[in-house]
Image (cartoon, rainbow, N blue to C red):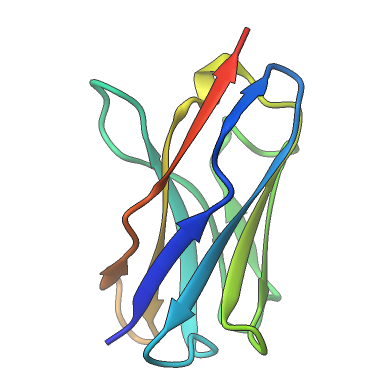
Length: 119
């Protein structure tokens, strides 16, 4: 089992920056693809970014490409999401998730952290 705990969410003005952290415990995540997802009120959960288990490959949704950066520190068992030039439409609960190698679905999810961007 992998437990994931997100932190770093808060209220920020449009144009500002935040860095979210996702700390894992219970098992090393060095062999997991890690992803960030978000869900705004009244909307479906959507993919934001993902990073391969080596950190060598990253993926981003079109809505955040060029503004957000996902990274990982396997020694700290932690994944990060650097968010720059935040927009009001980025307001959502951000959750991280872990996908074991060989699987197509994310098996482990955190509770999420609230990011609110004011205009």
